[in-house]
Length: 370
Image (cartoon, rainbow, N blue to C red; front, side, top):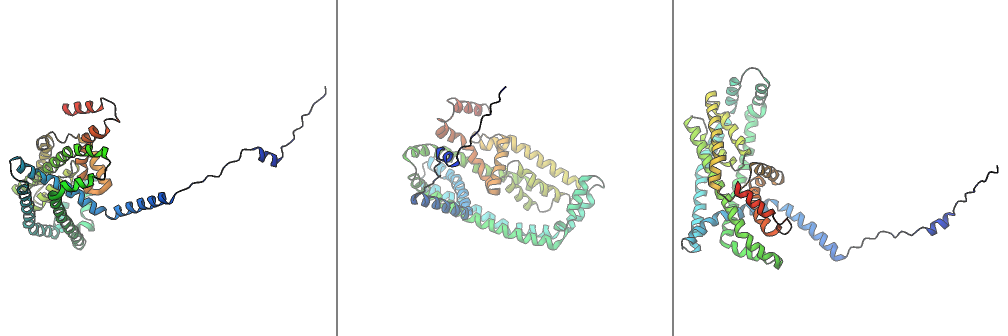
């Protein structure tokens, strides 16, 4: 049988290249206008990063001004002129500053005394710990570490903490001044900023701003009330049980009560530790009293104080605080809650068209059931 062999002739490289479709080189053209916008955007972002602390102060000042506006609104509802309401709000601010000024010397004295007694406190706590077990061993190592028992190291940290506290106090005073200016001239500033928005968004902002302001102001006022109650309760309990530094520990409780859920553990630990210097039974009584108040605050005081304005679940509060802490530290953890609580207003006015037709109604129904 004959065998046929098919010959394979390779294509000429030049001919193959000529028959292939030519690929056009990728070209990106950027106009000078677009390049200028990119550079301007980068500059604005860098400027915002540099002014981050100032923006935080302005944001907190806005929240405080909204809270003080409740006083002005209460006066005007009773027929008084607006300037009288502003004057009353200024008197409240001055009274608060005077109270802080009166407490500072005593707080500094108690803090310095507590730092000087830390080695004695360390030895006393070590003797109170049980002998065996992993938890007592960990606590014993912590109490015997240089950062807790060495007076020089402790005093250095105290000086650093005092500098930080002084900076916080100065920032707070600046925040008070900014909030007063916003209280006096806030409406005109809002209208001035509103003019930058497109016409289609101005009416929505005018509609949303009163509701958001009411929610935020209710949150600030409610948080102030709950913090005062927590600090007063802590001071009363520690004073009755003869625990040292009751005023300082009460102030710590009032400050950390601002942080929901997490704040409880931050102010109960130093109180129990200081109560150990009296007796283990006193420490147990302090822990029991603090725990009882935490339940009372969570299930009775907070719903009564905040009312129907802030309907946030415990999980939402916890996740919001964690997200705020990661974004902006303690300031973010404090300030994020009124922002999250304002979401229903944003949903009704801006997001309703983007969602399913019955989404807003279902959310309202769920809020009514809570």
